[in-house]
Amino acid sequence: QVQLVESGGGLVQPGGSLKLSCAASGSVVTIYRMGWYRQAPGKQRERVATIINSGSTNYAASVQGRFTISRDNAKNTVYLQMNSLKSEDTAVYSCYLNGARPGGPTLTYWGQGTQVTVSS
Image 1 (cartoon, rainbow, N blue to C red):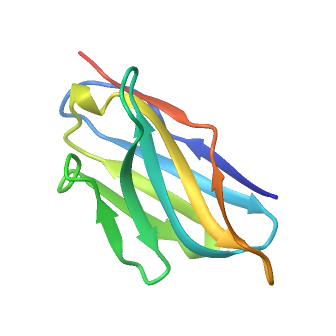
Image 2: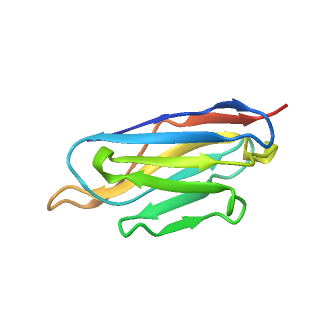
Image 3: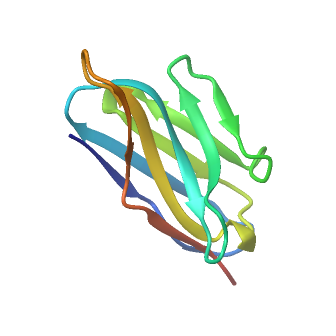
């Protein structure tokens, strides 16, 4: 089994910054992609950012230019640097890992989520 542990959420004022981390541990898997989703109360879950093995990244239009996803392969950790935060960024942010054990199927694993609140 793969465990994902997120950290870095909290309360920040509009215009501020936060950096989320998501560390993967447990079973050895080939990681194909990692990323972040978010869900605000009463809204659908939204894919925020993804980074694939090649290092290519992809962002939701709503965060493009403000958020940066990165990955430390040695630590199996993915980061989400969030700048110029807005109230509409308030949500529970969850990281995910898409990968496969040797000879096994490709699966998606999820973290428990971390709350980000942007408010003055």
